[in-house]
Amino acid sequence: MKNIVILISGRGSNMEAIVRACAAEGWPARIAAVISNKPGAAGLDFAAAHGIATAVVDHKAFASREDFDAELQRVIDGFAPDLLVLAGFMRILTPAFTAHYADRMLNIHPSLLPAFTGLHTHQRALEMGCKFVGATVHFVTAELDHGAIVAQAVAPVLDGDDADALAARVLKLEHRMYPSAVRWFVQGQLAVEDGRVRQLAGEAQSFS
Ligand code: NHR
Ligand code: GAR
Image (tube, rainbow, N blue to C red; front, side, top):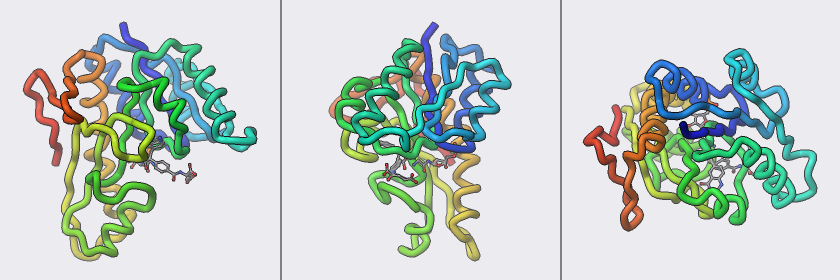
């Protein structure tokens, strides 16, 4: 039984999708904890209501990123994670932290990486006149939004779309894609070779 720890900063709808899929599909895993850097994050209420351990490590309480990351790592490791999942987690993590969880930390980013790393991705895609937007599940490394790509989802940009409309359209795809990617990891169905990720059971790594 593998232990999954999920980091959130807010609503936590991707965390919720993973929690529900883990239970409904009988993964060989359990959600050991949901941890937020923001006190009062709505996702914490969902996790607690589903009997999942929760914790808050408030980044504002620390003098440096290094100090925050060290405490966050200490709290996370108390749950013996096999996999660390970033789900709307909004703090850039230090190289020491990402090295500690190398090859066992995933993130979902709301763009088709390597396009639009960083923040405000849908607004930037609109401003560039993009005809598709999407999301990427990737392994997390010290280099921001640059880890090996596990899966991607794509959605069209329609007339009249604003960033919120795009985010809502992509979020529906995220809620299908991220649980699949986490399941593949805990089932040992991912192979990483030369920075490219293969799904070993023939499941599609693209969603639309
Ligand atoms: N850390 C590392 N080292 N590598 C990655 O790939 C990471 C990461 C931490 C978070 C999520 C990422 C996203 O999917 C993520 C990937 C926050 C920022 C950011 O600029 C950028 C990318 C992501 C998350 N955060 C600001 C900061 O100063 C704060 C922004 C805010 O609070 O709203 O940390 O988008
Ligand atoms: C999701 O769309 C995710 O792709 C994005 O924020 C949303 C989180 O929603 N993640 C980031 O922007 C990470 N920097 P959720 O909290 O409901 O899962």
